[in-house]
Length: 110
Length: 108
Image (cartoon, chains in turn orange, blue):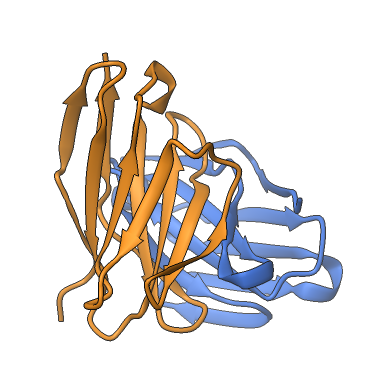
């Protein structure tokens, strides 16, 4: 049974560019959440998708957007990248309350 | 929003020692999870424990929801236990709010 997968593993982008990160949930899970983890801090909630709709959103600007597909996989898009967007981006999936995390995508903005 | 505080922030142990990590939260929660983050960044589920006590091998956890805290016990620590331990609580709508973590180093 495959766990949560994310791609790519690492990514280097230039300030002002746009990036798309991808997540496939654990088999049977229908809810996907995205988190941003800056160095030395705990993960922070970005948003959550369920039934292809954004169900909840944390305190992140509109530059952060997402999508969920009919197969429950999800994308996170970040526009107009800033240096401060450099972080580990974690995807979590769930069916009910307990969340399971993927290995993350490490984004570096130069 | 809810505040989650973990203590201690850093802990250094000799292999074989026992330890207790604490998580305090400022409001009622629906659920609570403990995670271990390995050096590569992967968050590994340890416990899903909204209340009560659970044990899994050398690890156990207790959550006292009415007093707004949870404890993670690690017994007979091993070098592979090193990493960051996070407590995360679920409030409204299944979003998780994380503490700042406890950095555990186990020396051989």
